[in-house]
Image (cartoon, rainbow, N blue to C red; front, side, top):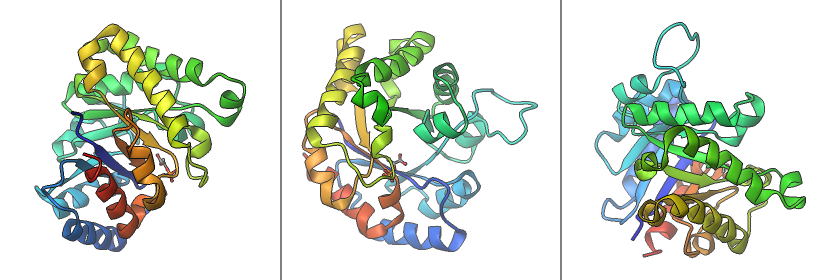
Length: 253
Ligand code: PEP
């Protein structure tokens, strides 16, 4: 049985005061005995403080991005080793906002995936098609291409400790959620693609859905057989919403 994961991507939001309040409220409410993993992904500057606030409680801390290079003359970048050094456990790679605004291509995303794994961080590999791509019937071609680039550089065995997040670009921050059936279809496609190379890894891989997940739609999405939790943006900034989403994941099993 795959253990659900609920990951909160705060994007470029927050402040020391707001983060402290949000994390304190979550710590108070989430149940350590829930059979799920929970992680928050604050902006870089707040990672160490978030880590300290959460100590060794049930909520892990991850970064929203990671540099593909190990160290050196890369001004403004943050390496995987630095993230690991301050207690981060995971890093998003290939979020659609990184692909769109910062022109990160499949090859760079594949290198970031490798960089995260090289120090034991769990990469959360984000895949997803735009509305144009969906409407022209290219969803599987796009998601397959994004996935294949990471598989080609890293190899199937490296997916043992990875997580995939299917995030249709048209559903991120738009309030327009993929229907549970739409999400399930792409999740099943991703799992098949992985399972073609290694059936065990395909069976164990956690595939999260992301794109306007909220308290009101989480249970229906998480009820789908290949949806193993969520990557939550906007709703992760509200303790009430995020708690309810976690509770929906915990109730799944
Ligand atoms: C995200 O940031 O990955 C995301 C899915 O955002 P939202 O939940 O706001 O659509």
